[in-house]
Image (cartoon, rainbow, N blue to C red; front, side, top):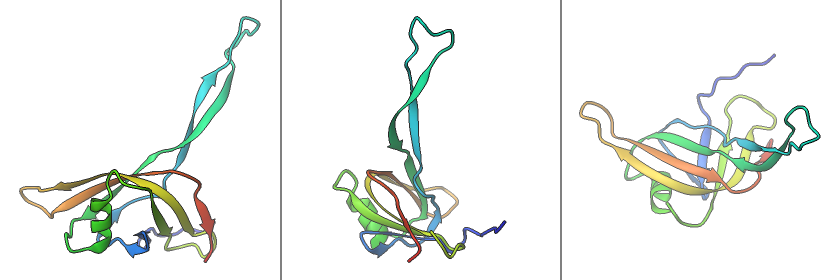
Length: 132
């Protein structure tokens, strides 16, 4: 079984690289269960509800001059943007392309530490996975 390091993965928004990314992931999907039990059941019965994409949070070392971070900051509450995540290790099925809403961009100013930012996005459709 192959194992890969996450270091070196990249992310772009609208074709522009986002720099100084400390941590991020590929947005995941989840589904709530719907209770469809009735009086003839002796055990609860469930079906899956609609699939929803979970929020994804990016942790950044804040750079106000970085155009990728600027795109995140300037498009909070705007139209969906195209994101591309390229994983660093695998050679197949390692590029994820999707549209997402930018829900938030917050800058943190610790008393003793680097300026950091957190961006939150929500995927709005399918994640297209490719090798090139």
